[in-house]
Amino acid sequence: MVTNITDEVERSVWYGWGDPSRARPLSPSALTFLRRTLKLAGIDAVHHPVELTDVRLAPSSLEREVLAELRGALGAENVSTEAPDRILHSGGKSTPDLLRRRSGDALNAPDVVVFPGSAEEVRNILEISARRRLAVVPFGGGTSVVGGVEPERGPLAGALALDLRRLDKMLHLDALNRTATFEAGIRGPAIEAALEAHGYTLGHFPQSHQQATLGGYIATRSAGQASTGYGRSDELVKSVHLETPAGPLNAGSTAPGSAAGPRMLDVVVGSEGTLGVITKATVKISPVPERKAYGAWAFPSFAAGAEALRRLEHDGARGDMPHVCRLSDEDETASTFKLGGWKTSALARYLAVRGQKSPALGLFVWEGAADEVAERKRRSARILREAGGIPLGPLPATSWEHGRFSGPYLRDELLTRGVYVETLETAASWTMVEETYRNVRRAILTALQANDGGAYVQSHISHVYPDGVSLYFTFLAGLEEDGLAQNERVKAAASRAIVNAGATITHHHAVGMDHSPYLQAEIGDLGVSILRSIKNTLDPDGIMNPGKLIPEYKEERQ
Image 1 (cartoon, rainbow, N blue to C red):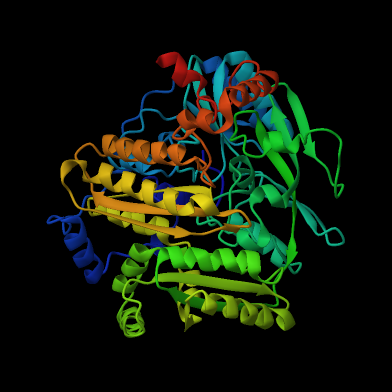
Image 2 (cartoon, one colour):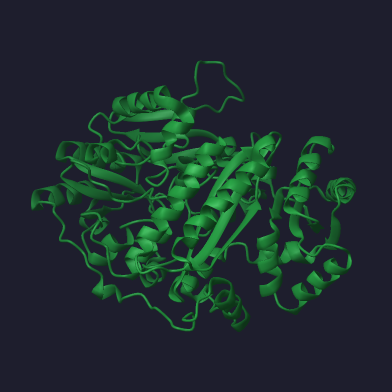
């Protein structure tokens, strides 16, 4: 059985995202925009998912003795073969995951779901699973969009989803060192609530914030929307406790620096559940900012805006970079203006009068001490203005912050209207940003239009580094009869373009199953061999999250 207070909400959205009370229908203007742009005459039709009771589910393949052993280790109330629990753990939140679930296909669901309440119980589950040859899929918020929690079995006897929701506490806060230790199953809002009571924040706000867990942040090397200021998850984590089939591993240190060989912490961060189960972690924390200052700027083009960000990073005073630094390309800006109501329409007309008929919109948030934030914003404004930017005031940035976690709800509504929508991301150096952006965008458009349909591709920069930026693409088209094949075609074309550009196959979505075929191009044959060797040491029976990161079982099928 499912065991916490979010049960009712999660059961009601087994096919989609989050809290259904926060979902909103598409506005008439949005429907008109999509009808014209995507050439979708049938967008007024509504395609509801099947009922939960009609979802197709294979019987659990586990023998009674195995289930009895699991119940003996955790208690019967924390071991479930119930259909709703298995369906909820049959995948993540990628578009293929949602398409399968909405159509009633959960045939790949795990045979059992377990809810351990301690590291010792996790250790017991791993011992049983190794002996019984069960695949173990660590499951936090289930927000993976790259097939990271698919219950792959490979040659094993069955699949077990190990849900960490009971490991949801803050264990310790060290104000002197500005660190905090949490259990891995705690979700983003609970992290912030626990820290805010003491005047601190983790500062990690991915779009999946409401659902995602600390263990998921670390296992996927995630980046939050304010990571330009606070840092990515791999920069925030100090130490991790990992339960592996070979035994417990404490990786990292509370020491401020160490030269004691290669960092074991780097083995765990980004390992995506393929080596073991993260049960707790110590992370860096920051004081809750005294003040936030918001700003929006329009640039004559996406390229001009990217150059403005480079100058802000390279030429600005140290520490002046905004914590949130987001630049939309011309297409994302156009859709924002067209769908934002009369205020954004007026803004578009104002910019046209100023000579920017196809602008790129930049949104910025500076955080920190009250006596510093205004000065940092002022110094940044000088550079942005010199780069051709036109200031638009704080409202666009405050509006974005207000709705920044609503994107996944919009995807659910688009799928209901027969619109295919997906995202992918990468990162490239300053010298390669323009070429990467252009080639990946072209590859997506070409693949989407393969059957002569309409398509729309938009992109934004969401993270800025001294040597480059991330690129995040969102793309839409009419949902084809075989949506899974459509998605595979588009993602493959985009991934090949990313690899050919020399960019990274993933900046913050992780590798999972979707990107694993392209990992070798990024880290080389020897790099893959090193990863395999580490896995063989910590997971000698190959039970941990098969098929992810290192595509072992996929290769055997070919």
